[in-house]
Length: 302
Ligand code: ASP
Image (cartoon, rainbow, N blue to C red; front, side):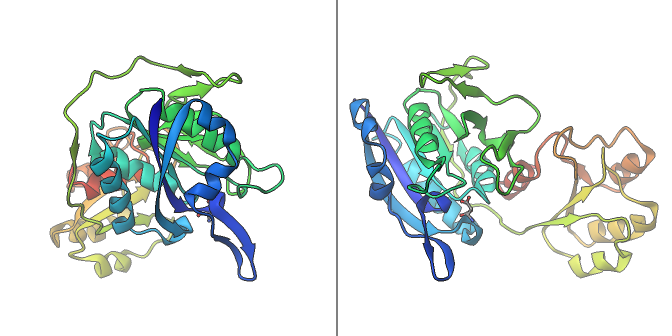
C-alpha cells in the first residue's frame, strides 16, 4: 500500500469558529477522520507541523515545510500539505524552487470552507490531493477544486468562491475526473538529481507601480537587496521615474520588472518604456507569476 505523509499547517481547512473569528484548531488526524475511504488505498501518516492561518506564515515556516519533505522523502511515496489558501501560491512557488528536481509528488491543498462545515470543499480537495500524491508524478503541485496546478503557476484569483485558483499561462497540469482518476496534459519530465536549497534570502520587496507614485519613494529603498517593480502591461518605467529607478540600481539594489497582469508576463522589448527599463539595468521577470518570481529571486536564481 502507498505511504503518504500529511503535513498539517493550519488554514481554513483546519478552522473552527471562535469568539475571535475563524481560527485553525484541527490537527491532521482530525482532518483524516472525515475521509474513511482513504484507508482502502493508501496509508497516511501525520506530521502536525504548524497550526496557523497562512497569513501568519514566514519564509522560515515555509523552509520548515520544505525540510520536512526533504528529510522524509525516502520514507514516503508522496506528500500532502494542508495549507491556508491565502498564501498557498507563495508556498507552492517557494517549494517548487527549493525542492529542486524533487522525485516525489508534493501536493498542497486547502479549502474555502472548514472541514466539517456544510457544503465544504475540504473533503474533496483533501481526497484529490491524496490521489495526486499516490499518482507517482514527481513535482510540486496544488490540488484544488478538481484542478492540479504546477507549483510555479498557482494564482489565487478569488477570495470567497470555491473555484478560487487558476493556473497562470497554461491550462492546469491535470484534471481530476469524477471517478477519481487523473488526466495529465503532458508526459512527465525526465528525472533529474533532487537537491534542497538550504539558504534563501527573504529580503525581496515588491513595489506596485501606480500612475502617480512619487519619485522620492525610491530613495527610501536605496541599498535594499532586491526590489521587484510590478509595472503596467508588458512592462516599463515611466519617464518621470527614470532617474529615481536608476538611482536605486546605482545604490546596489537589484531591480526586477514584472507585470501587474495576471497572465502574459513582461516583455521589455516591446515598448520604448520597456527598453528604458532594460537599458538602466533592470531585469525582466518575463512570464513568471509574481509568486514564482519572488521564490526564484529568494533562491538566487536570477
Ligand atoms: N485565511 C485562511 C488562510 O489562508 C484562508 C484559507 O485557508 O482559505 O489560512
